[in-house]
Image (cartoon, rainbow, N blue to C red; front, side):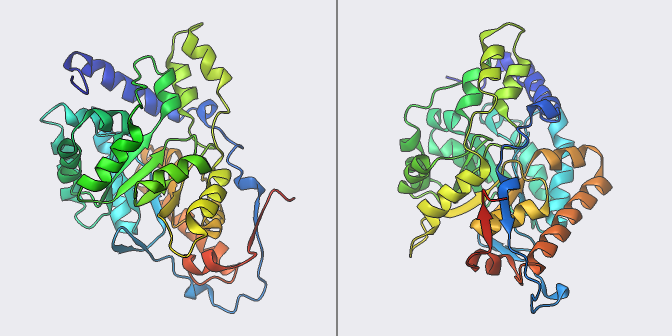
Length: 357
């Protein structure tokens, strides 16, 4: 069976354009639900370092990057995506951010589509790029076809995204997740790059993290509740008075908040002598201070999606200024906790608290 039916290509492109528009609509952002406003970092009035000593450099998938940031995969495989991704990859390479591309689902079907991925790589040969496919498509595909997505992008890793709420509410959704954990185990075994398992805005519970780690996945991206909510987006796309529109309202606050997911990951994956896998965090991150909070709890890398998309659509200078702002704010947070780099902040005891005013 085709992963993307040829007769549905026009519908696919319309849906992807609608996703971009809806992601920019504030009603589809789960603002205030991430838990980040309830995390406090302890101020250090005697940091014993100079501000110029603060270094954001972090390792990422075998390379050293100038920051601990990444752009989460957002859009791919339709005409509007190329210009957005081109701008993002150029600035990510320039500033030392990692970048995930949007779902490469359509690339599995159409032989001409890999050229979009190849062009991105040619334009940014030093960038850390992360391929992307949905778990439901991975279940239906052999490992060699998934590896082809990695190869076309020359990616350093591939993200397998989990989006059960979106698939259930989307009118054209594919909510077939049976065999998912076996598929992840197969990909870990067969693919030549690390596997990153990521949610898409509903977070990962402790139980889910245990299951993911058990199959040897390299990294998890928590992508918690607090940012773009794909249940809300699919509800907004659904016909008025439809089951999907009503269900989207019912599930508008569904998910594991970003901070709750991060604390679960700290207990399940990071509080052991042999760390089980790397933890990346995204979902409602809106500032460099938000990033510092997640790093303090244990995140190795912190991701942005909707704010980066909004900045990119405003043009190159807007995107560059927004990225500079995130970097500056993280430096301030590190300096004011007496941390010379992100690794020092992660190691500090008692530097963060949650749920206390």
